[in-house]
Length: 181
Image (cartoon, rainbow, N blue to C red; front, side, top):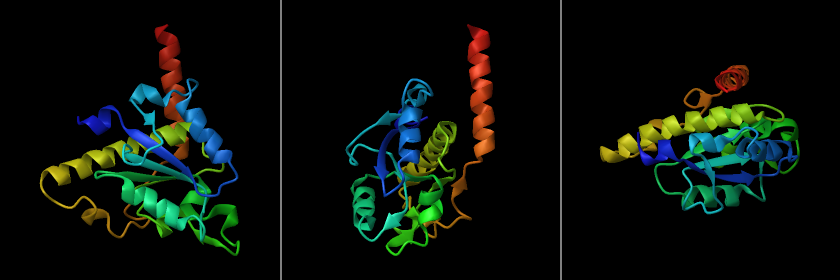
């Protein structure tokens, strides 16, 4: 278990969403859902972040910002597309300035669909991203390029978080915690 799996730092960027997913990201980090129990820390500096959480669709005005945030992060790093808009462009996919999902700007490691995405699914996506960080860290340690195995970064290579399983797992965890008290 490396430093990243013990305390992954995330940076959140709203790439033009309706703010529904942004509220859910904040809810996941607050005491109600308590992502900090997994060591997740929210940071405002991409140089400190391990995981980039992106909500909203990518458009012509923000594609450079998303790419700059990604490029400022150090390896190993992972990207999580949070919500339908970040995954595919969502309801805004036909707008004149929308390019599409986050994969059109940077490589995506985990897709977490939902409109608005549930906090349980966000936590599950971050946990999946931590596993990917571990794999990338092992590649770095072996002297290999961590971006090589995931260069195509299409839907077949990335991890999709099953939303229903995340909700059931969170409900089971809440039941276990309640029984222990």
